[in-house]
Image 1 (cartoon, rainbow, N blue to C red):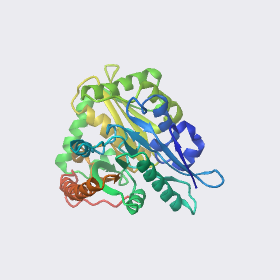
Image 2: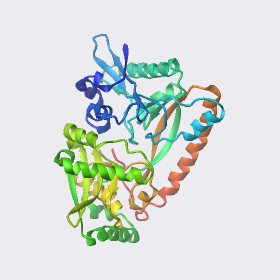
Image 3: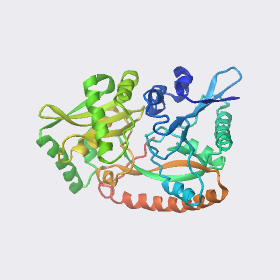
Image 4: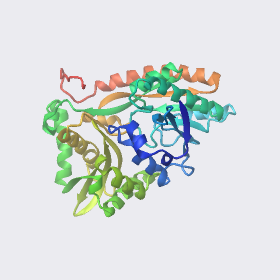
Length: 385
């Protein structure tokens, strides 16, 4: 098995990478990741330096890969470790640089060990993990983090001694709803009335919502959406890392995977949300507005996404990180996972202890929030396959 280290995804043929990535996860696609690099959304400016790993068999065929970045900050990861970095600083140690296997700026669970479907896939996965750990030790980084891992990757990384961290997001699940009203039938009368009132306020304000796929958007509309995106970050003292050129690029290369909810008032665009579509899941990613209307955020970011999922047969809607207000609108507390290797022995043990206590707190937190879901008492759902 030959291990390769690539400082740009452009070094790896798109067809080879996509054969491993598959079609179910839009963020793993070569088109998405290479556009981040091409337009400077990752790189020295923002502290995401590509270090992608590949594994090739004796014939030179790509048998496995892992997206990997060298980081000099913790921005854009959504698994918050600033307290760990502060502990290192107070002890006179350097937490940065560190290695991160993740999709930049994307808190969405997905495959991190991309494997060809062969009898040797388990061996390839173990080889990639060992190579990542060797890379971390060789370059004397403080730590190696695999973020928003799927269950199979989580278990495999645990067998290599990595520490598990549990987080919480709020996901909507499609239990075979016929339409939005059918979804609301499961709500208690009071919660159903409140949600309908929120939607009615938007309609009564004269706001119209247009649903467009990425390739249906004009350059002008992408200019509007990119300004919406920028305004949200600038208003919250954040850093808008994604550019108009990036959005237009992926609209050309994977436009059918992008779903934009664009709100108009008095003939002009006032708000919008950018979503990405996988095989079974809609992912809400970016939102912005230039006008303040009651319940506009809920309509554009949540209710339109739910309607889209129902009409297109998608099983889940993941509208992004955080946001307890989503619970009252039918989004269920859902655990997320990340895996961590800490190079410093004493701090690794301290972090392991912290993670065990944090996990119990997160589990209690999710259980409490489940009691605030808007569904009728005794309402039962069948498990998604």
